[in-house]
Length: 260
Image 1 (spheres, one colour):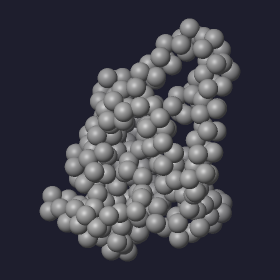
Image 2 (image 1 turned 60 degrees about the horizontal axis):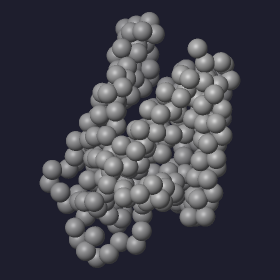
Image 3 (image 1 turned 30 degrees about the horizontal axis):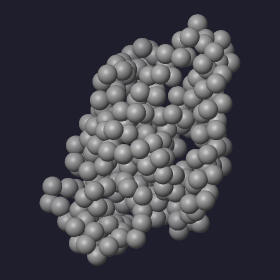
Image 4 (image 1 turned 30 degrees about the vertical axis):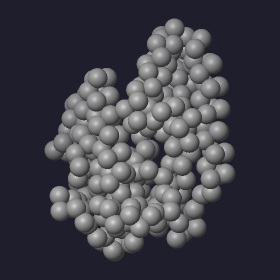
């Protein structure tokens, strides 16, 4: 068995290793050429969702689905069963929370699934920038270096345990597979992509944290699991409202917006 401290370090390492993979969606934003705009599958308030971005997101989601299958990840239904949760006794907020988690965990990278992820990210990113949360390339590089340094320090500690070595080797293998699956030609290319991704995910994360803090301040009587269910559901409502307010022009007839 892992000692308590090393188990904590290993858990942190796993999170930091998988976080960049889980965060990947579209290609990083850059100046779009007239051709890219013309060939976009959709425009979100004038910003294109490119065919390349959609294909990348489909690949990413397919990879994650494959990893879930290979690792035998416990389904939401099985998790609820093992934790002794009785569906009939859940509140509507709790049911909604777990139904959404179930849908997300069962996604396989189908075209419209990937499209909806990209559109949601785009409206949230645009809103985050409006709120002043835009992140520079230098700030993103610094954050990536902090994550990398923490991961390396955790790695050194965790490698002292034989069980941890096996898990770390597995995670490194997953990282290598992801690089190959997504078509990155070198570790440096993957690193640069992750830095570019942080420029988008960091603003959204800050917007989300501000939303949660504000909602919590308005509802001090709600805490614990109930708070988690409700604030996540309200965040989903907020995202859906941004989608409804956005000028979304879909150019691919196979695609449509799905609201929670």
